[in-house]
Length: 290
Image (cartoon, rainbow, N blue to C red; front, side, top):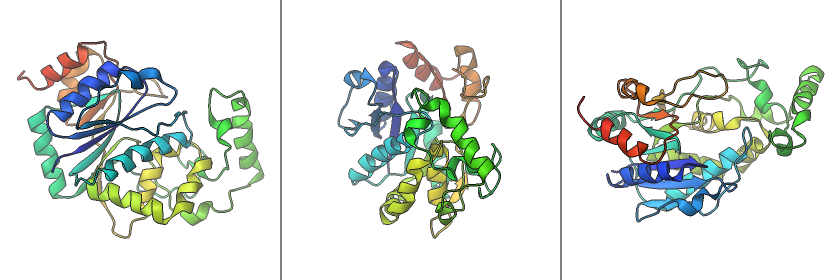
């Protein structure tokens, strides 16, 4: 079986085009979601294996829109009717961290054990307000216009959160969907697991709707969903390589760090901010002998 790559992007179409062509040459399907607020969609090249998702979402940081865009990708892939070994969610600034042959051997070994490569906390999030507890993400009812950092109403966001914290008010239904789990948004899941995500969401529309008024739940939605499956999945880490020099987002990887990426044992690395031509050089180096 071949794999399916789901790409969330908003810029650098030249980088996305090189990556999608590289994956399609190996026989894999690629589905691309371009942020509805970005003009980059006009420059994305499609083919029999590279598809541009039509139902585009304007993605805003921390909001439900990230989940909505992710689900558009998942549903487009599942609508193909193909059986996939793995489905990988990556960003337009992700690139493989190992060469083709090594990647194939690694994924075959993982699939033999039905590994679900996703970071997922072992402890349910049922208490604790701050970063360790994350209760503030799901027990507060957030109007989404308030979450958007570019909204004129975002200035009341922290005040709104503090009001809920100090009054002890909680969403009436939040415990119904516990336990909650969290981790990185980026994952590699078996095709069967992704199909079961769609099935669970369709059979539990109230569960999906609950996340519409949460905060940064793109780091909780898939983890919580698969933890609600009747059969416990075989979860391992998501095998993504990142370097954090700032607290809010991973740093752009430099050419000097390319060998470190190759030696990491990760499947994918992020994030890359390539100029035209650089992506080809990186992929060539990735598949060459040192």
